[in-house]
Every structure is written in C-alpha cells, then in structure tokens.
Length: 118
Length: 147
Length: 335
Image 1: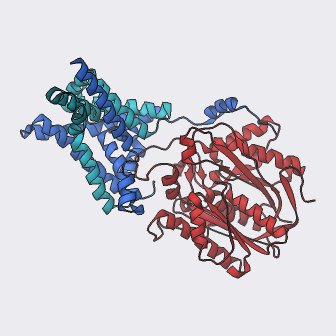
Image 2: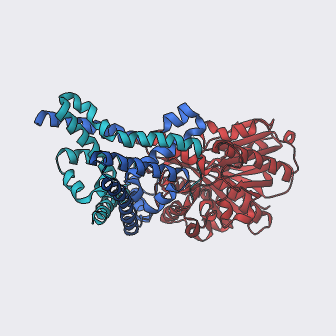
Image 3: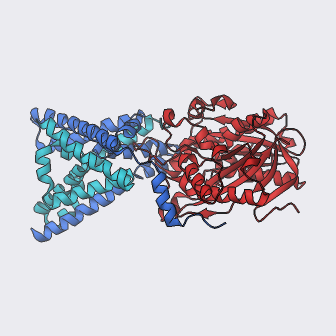
C-alpha cells in the first residue's frame, strides 16, 4: 500500500513540475529552486506534513521533500535551541543529502568524463 | 527596408509557428518515472524501517542512497538520457538534484580540480541551496516569533 | 564603382572558390549529407582531452585537408579568415597558431562562414591577396557548456531549440583558377525582432535573413528566377518558416527554391534534433561539403548563400536583453 501512495504522490508532484516546464519555459534549475522553496513554506504553514503522512517517500523524495527536511529541521532546532535554531536547524536536517551529493559527485568526476547527448 | 512586423506582432507569429511540447506525453512520462523513483525511495525506507532503523535515520539514508545511484547514472552517461525521456520526472526528485551537482563537476573537471570541478559543482544546484536555506531561515524566524 | 547599393557590392573580378573541405562529428555523419563530407569523427573527443581542443583540431585538420585538396601550401595563402563560437574565438586561434599564415579572426556567430567568404573575396578582388582560406567551426559539446548546461544534466531540450553542429568547413578562394565564383556580396545589418528566448534562435535570426534577402534582390535587380537555389545558414525549421512568412508578406516568394543548412544536415524525425542544426560549423560544413559539390557538378549554377547569426552571449541574455540577428549573403555562380 505504501508503494502505491508513494507512486501516486511522487507522480503528481513531478507532473506539476512538467506542466511548469512546458507551459512557462522555466528551466530545470528554476524548477529545482521553486520546488525546494515551496516545500519549505508548505511545511512551515503545516500543509506538507499531511502529504508526507499520506505519500511517504512520494512526498519526501521530490525536492519539495528536501524543503520539508529543511523546514522541519529549523522548527525542531528553534524548539530546542531558541533563536539560534533558525540558523542551525535547516542544513543539519539536510546534511546527509548535501554531503552525499558533494562527495559522490567529487568521486564520480574523478572517474567519469562527459559525453555528448544522444 | 522597414520591419515586416512590429516586435509585438512578430512575437505572436513566432508563438504560432513554434511547436508546443507534447505536453500529454511529457506529463505521462514525468508521472510514471517520478512515481517510480519514489517507489524506489519507499522501498529503501521500508527496508530499513523493517530492520529496526529509526525514522530519523531512514530519512537520511534514503536520500543518500538515491543520490548515490543518481550520481553513478550521471557518470555512466545514462541520467541525461533518462532526463530526455522523463523531463520533470527525473528533475524534481532528489536524484535530479544529485544529477545537477554531478553533471557540472564531471563537465568542468577539464578546468582543474579547484576552479573547474570544485568551483563549478554548484552552478546549477547552488541556487537550490541559497534559496532553500534562506527560505528555511525565514520560516524559522516566523516560527520563533509565533510559537 | 563596385557598389550596387547601400549593402551590396559586385566584384569586378569574380573570385574562384578553388576547393573546399569539411570534417564533421558522428551525429552529422549519420545524417542525410554524410556522403558529402571529407571526414567523419568516430566520437566527440577525437583523441583530445577536452572538447575545446577537439574543436580546434577539427578546424586545423580541415585547413590541412583543404590545402591538400587544392594543392596549395601554407606559403601560398596570404590570409586565413576564421571564426567560431567560443569566447575570444579560441578554436580558430589555437588551430591556426601552427600554420604560419597571417590570420584575421572573425566573429559573426553562426553567420561567420559567409562573413569570411565575403571578406576573403573582397581582399582578393581588391588586389591585396592571391589566395585566402575562409574557415569556421563549431562543436556541440563546447557550445552546450558555453551557452547552455553541462552535458550530463538530465533536461529536455525545448522543441524550438537547435542542435549545434560539430564540424568545420573550409574554402580556398583564389584570383586564379577554376571553380564556382563569388560574384556579389550583400552585407547584413543587425536586426532585432525583440526575441528573448535563447532556445528559439531561428526566430531571432529570421528578421535579419528576410532583410538581407529582400535587400539583395532589390540592389542587384534580381529576383527568385535568377537563382537555382537560395540557402540560409542555420535558421532551422522555425526560422525558415518565419522568413518565408515575412518575405511573402512583402511580395517576395522564394519558397520553392529555398532551403536551409540547418534543415539539410539532420534528419529531423530520426535524429531528434528538433528545430534543426545550428552553429558556425553548420553553414560551413553544408556549404563546403554538399553545396560546393552540387555547384561543381553543375546541378546548381547560381546559388544565393545567406548565413545567419544570433549576436548574443549568455551574460546579456540573462540580463534580459533581446537577441539581435544578422545575415550576410553571397552569390556563388558558375560563370
């Protein structure tokens, strides 16, 4: 069951991205920015948590989920550390993803070389 | 000679003759590929949850593994082919973020390890961090005020 | 007086194109014109460490090839007029540093091939040179990284986008010898139609193509009947369509004799190149490979070649400026 809800939720979020690309000529870089920011804001106003509860990975794997992690981290740290948490919480929660992307990309770029598109 | 059309008239004609993206096909593909990547994410999540890992641990492991897979596919010259097929279906998931970090890193290695690879790694993904983190600071600030 | 009008000149002594050479990439070698090119690369690197070095090598080897085919040595060549798309025209400069030939670097974006043929012909007709090489190049991978995104980024190309041709074409112009001759030259003005979409270059350049074709007919007192074929550089499918539309609107109908190098070089359906080919190497390789051979075989006797360019950089487009276009025309005839 969790697979089906993940599939549907993730599919819908990606479809929204596709509509934006095709209808507004937003480049992929802008889409990424937009989705993360929307994820942060929706989490902040309490609207994203229900989507995560329904969709599981379908809501956390898309970049809105990255925003969800940032916002949740900030909220958690503000709870425990007060005002300092505003600055420490976000990246702390997203640290695994960011570090993985940096480190694996570094290793990959030492191994692979770029190729022309097909 | 004078221009045949004013710039405004011309813009309308350009829009008319420029082919639109096959949007139904694109959305279908984005839905299925994006959904499928999330299924993989759910599989990793369930796998570790069933082995007793905490929710917090799993919420870190899942993106790390997906990013690992995406970076490997990028290096093998496969992720751009997937992207051509799936569009937003492979851009929007965290794997798309990983691809946007790995692809400039691989590309700009030719300009050296520091100013090429190191500096250009975030040409595409940098804005995601800049605006994502800044938005989270604003959200945190309001949360601090209102709690 | 050799001037026919504000933009057009007529050469007193038409300049011969005594031979041409072309080298293209793998994808271009899988296209409909494959059999016309002198050499087709097996991969995008050609044994070099970076795409920039590859592009430079393509240009260098094309020069060698055209020297060999025209039975000239580098000391016979008075000038080499070359250009490409990369910042500071490095593909040309690095290719030519080992040739020992006086070099003039040109930039006209994708219009550079006709710009170099024009200036070469003027140098020769003016009596300042006996032999001149005109050459340009482009490479898909160098253009992508300079103008767009990293190659491995998984994004979809918009339907209006054009595919930068990997390739180079070179011509040897001479005051002595046989071959098709450059007879008239119409130098384009910059025309800006207000297009801001860097993924729709054809639309940005169509206004300039229209202006140059119309002006050429006007100032030479020629019309479509005079020519066997009218070929633009790299307007692609959308730009060609728009050019036809605008010319029709002012009563010039060239449709039945009109095509475009960016349309000719790829098979749109099979090769998934969307709006067609582009880049300095597009017009250069299609002219040097395909069109020149058709002229030699006298299948075409009177050709109007119009190379089109979009004179922008990523910086200025990101600052919100529109994209100015330019188009230069030359007529090449079997006299």
